[in-house]
Length: 227
Image (cartoon, rainbow, N blue to C red):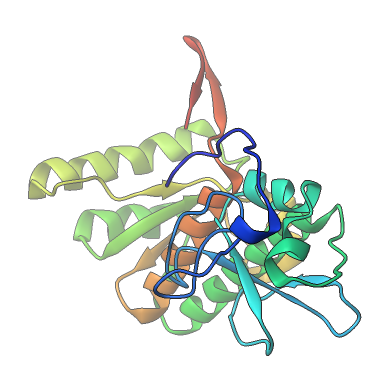
């Protein structure tokens, strides 16, 4: 996606956010689809609310799925310009969207678990990766490095053995405490999503959350580097 650009002079007349599909980011002006943009609508009282499931009635507007884009839309009062009405966007809207994305992800993980497409436990994950069933692995942010390393070895072995174009992706999105609060007994240290509609739903939501947060710096002996 196009990076956020410096502010440019705009007039009310040139703030036309409609494209052929009626979807354009109100911050970057990039066109997109419902799967690549976040939808926002105004509640009856004029409060801007995220419509992640794209089911709320009324005229909506679209923002690139990045925290910095949502924060800029709030700061520059772009929701009012896009919806052409007096609206109120909470300064905490960017954080609220992130909380909703996390809730959607953990809910989908629980659903996929019931469908047999999300399993946890280091040994089970390692075996599933080596079997070729896995489409993504997940680690708690506070997982021990040794456990992550062993599963990384399984991912690399599968990649080299199959000659696939890319390794199985790995996500580090939630801490143990966050999962305990949101998932209860389904919290995990190491887990994986398996092929299937529910498993693919988990990966889709994990990718969206990772994109929304943006690059994460990881510190190693060689210094900080993007994840």
